[in-house]
Amino acid sequence: MAEKNIIFFITDDQSRTLGCYGDQIAKTPSIDALTADGNLFSNAFATTASCSASRSVVMSGLHNHANEKYGHQHSFHKFSTYFTSP
Image (tube, rainbow, N blue to C red; front, side, top):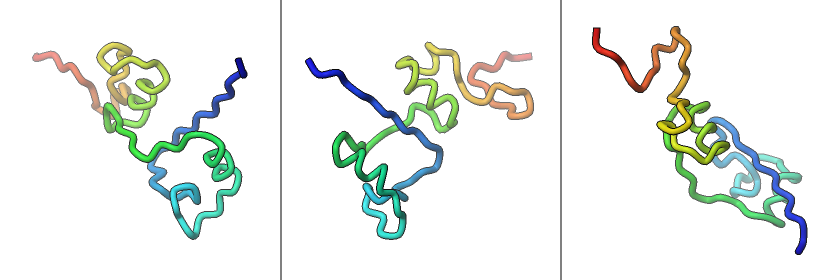
C-alpha cells in the first residue's frame, strides 16, 4: 500500500482568492499544482464563527462542547458559551 502524504491548509478570511478556485488575478502556482494532484474543497462549513474555536474542531475532530474551545476565552473578548447567572 502506498504511503499517504497529507498537507492541510487552513486560513482565516481566505475566500476564493487562489488560482485553483478560479481567481484570474491571484498567482498561486504551487498551491494550484498541489490541488491539481490532490483534493480541493469547494464546500466547507464551520461549527462556529470564531476562528480559533473553528480550527479546534477541525484539528481535534470534536465539537466545541466536547473539546471545550468555545471561542476567545480571554476576559477582554467577553465571549463565552455558558454564562452563570449572578
